[in-house]
Image (tube, rainbow, N blue to C red; front, side, top):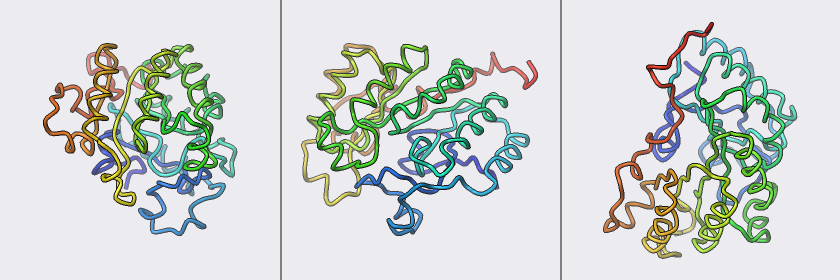
Length: 273
């Protein structure tokens, strides 16, 4: 069985493939789905995670056997740039291996400046990588309440700006959206900073009847009004679209694979080129 896998359901909207380096996380986000998915208690999931056993050996075996021309996301379970037991050494080794085998990669993290320790490796990928962060609240007190040990909103924005200014394609995940007004303020801030190339926009799901809290059709329309004039790449997740069936979207805005990192078949090269 390959350690790189095809996600399903709502996760599939993010990436054709994924790789989980840690099976735990230090951020302790209130909305985290992973403990339930893994059938772990919060005590057993949250903390300083160890890397998965033999992950580098298993990954190399996978990459020697399979060629990936579509994006592999790091990661759905855990955060590559949380406070891990190995201080991120395994993440760096994984990135080096993925780059060696010319795999297209997306990295999603709330680790803020921790992501910049691998900036040199991100640059080596060239156009085969996209690096992003989850943005939930602009108000730091609210962020601290919901994501107590993740980086602050200002640090995440600053990190995106640094990545973008260094020529790295960046993306922002607005899932979960918990308070639409906070997310809209964040979108405006990213446009002001010019630090995001691609937006993924959804809502909070499976959390205490969240669909009753907010006017989701209005949120979708507000996002469209903000982002369409900019010609930014935007994907609206099905969970949000289905609650606003009367709002017309373009094919690209509904296609989860429109903007994923891919290797153009006409430009494919061998491992040794």
